[in-house]
Structure formats: structure tokens, C-alpha cells
Amino acid sequence: MAETTIKMEFEGYWRDVNSGGIPSASGVYSVYAATHDAREKTVDLKRLLYIGEAADVGDRIRNHERRADWTRQLRTGEVLCFAIGRVASTIRNRAEAALIFKHQPPLNTSCTEEFKYDRTTMSLSGQCALLTTYFTVERTHRAAWR
Image 1 (tube, rainbow, N blue to C red):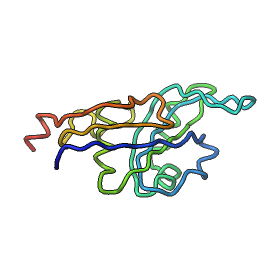
Image 2: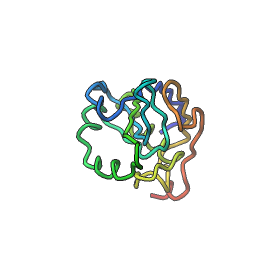
Image 3: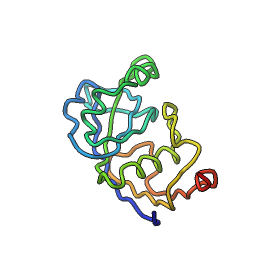
């Protein structure tokens, strides 16, 4: 694996009740706790809960086996909210690992302590609140020995 830069434009935000509108696309998704202002038709993202990847992010989000875990993280008045970043299947796992390693979402258990890929620079745009928009992650020493 060589050093690479991954550019992603995030789309969103979809509240849980509107998750049927999430596209069927290869990509990475972020799960947030948010509040919704029905009058203003806006969401206010409070916390990043989880980052994942899938060949079909829409289907994965709607049918995720850890949905109950996501919901348990919500405080009174909060709802689940989602954003997606489309990315080619060949680099999807690398993009997900870089985002998890950098942001350490509380419900992610893999990729939090080591990064097994060569130097990866992420350049994010669009609907990517609570995510660092430009960063570089280096292979960790622990991962290099495996």
C-alpha cells in the first residue's frame, strides 16, 4: 500500500425517520446524536456516535445490528442523524479506518488503537460536522509488526 489522499464529500443529514432516503451507494457513514427543530426544519448535531462503511450505506444504516446501541446513547429530545461520504470500494475500508482512528467514536471498537495502512490523508467537505476536515494518519508501529 502506498501513501494516498482520499477526498470525500459528505451528504446529509438524514434523521432516523427519513433514513429511507439515504442513497444506495458505496461509502462511509457517520452516526450522530442530534436535536431536531421541526419549526426551523434544522438539526443540531450534538455528538458523533459511530463511523461505518458499506457497499450500500443506505441499507446498512437501516438494518445495522448495533442500531439499539446507537439509540441507547440518545439523551432526552435527541434523535439519530446520519451523513454519508461516497467512496470507491477499493479504498472504503481505508477511509473508514482513518476516520475512526482520528475521531475515536465511542461506539466503534475496531481501528481505535491502531492504523494498519500507509500514510493516509483525508480531505472532507460537505456535511461533515464534528469531523476534522483535513488530517493525515500514519501507520502505527503496533500495526506494522503484524
